[in-house]
Length: 322
Length: 252
Image 1 (cartoon, each protein chain N blue to C red):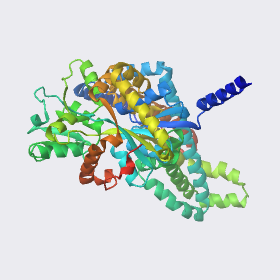
Image 2: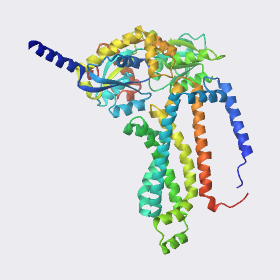
Image 3: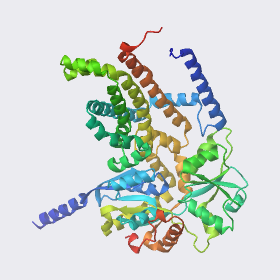
Image 4: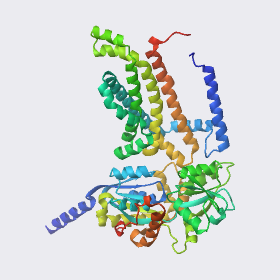
């Protein structure tokens, strides 16, 4: 009899594990390295205790992200750090869990003699998204060099990253600021073209920044945010943050396997290029609560240079979770 | 006007291909593919069932979008042509739809319908319907009032009037509207897919661009051009000739 009850209790607890309350968790992200750990989460079924099904939805631009948010189709998303801050400041239920991307932008050049930002003196640099990241950072770097934009460094604006690449490829420009994984894809394709002039990966914007601002060397660029009803469920936030952290570490250690996984979701990007992208925009997942000083310094920069990207003010401590 | 010369049209095509080839060779293969590479890649794409599925999705969206816009524009145009009050009521909406840039419509449609087929079809219908509507109303206005009076005297039913008065009168302007709707419908579907869909030709185009895969990019562009060509030359022009045969002046 006792055994019967025991097995009944066991059965009940097992079925409780097998049948979590939540039906679906919607994960989302852009086609970049910050999203790759989310793919690993789904592959591994790492959130099986939290939801019966976990899905991933790719978004490619701000409009798509907004459409998904408005439609309630996102619980967790990889995103630039200013996105949750902006949503939070505008009264939306958004919280930042983890910062994992600390350097995704690279200087790319046709000139083999350009090795650093300072080598660009007297030259012209193509900068996409002039009033967003990375344009804002470039402005600060120019000031830190003691230069003046237009005098020591000519800035050529580009509407977005693809058009910056086009300017570089068509010979209209020799130096451009680009983003991973498209830097790796571009360099790989360029190397395959017979007779194409070589392109060089010069230096990461993050490294230039660290040289210029040793007191505040880090740029917390992107990470994982929670959105909507899930932000109130602290236990879930902690679980997802932990799982994302582990998946990021896996991706960092097993770069080839991670690239193969990402290729299944982004079949148009070659595995080798994705692997290069992981190597050149490393994931370093840290809880948002632990990197608040870096985040606040970064947000302060945005408030100063582009207040509309962050809702006009520094976000309060409620942004950081869990 | 005499017939467009086919021989010169062929020469124009050859010149365009030459210009394409010249541009592609100066820009290099990362920026632009040559016609030959594009054709070769298109052939490969069409062998692959995954790509054919992308094409099928877009075709379905184009069909429903253009069909919906035509029905909606023609139906409302008929009613508005008959009744000045309806015409007045619809005028602000027509103005609104024709004045809003399609890019704005995509962004709004994405908010309302999310990403995917519903958004693309809504967008296509909304952008195309006003053109069909305006052409229908214009055709109705050109109707001979004496013919209409006669139809009234002989107590033609609505369907008789539609068959013998309205459709023949509307055929010309409607064909023009269909031609424009067909060609621009394909382009609008592709644009909507580039901006906010996870499948279809536009999505494949956006992916090819982000992978710097100019061969695939140009292959899809070529396919879009072929689709417009089939629509124009194989479907709409014969239809136009049939519908407008009654009022053509013989000149050859």
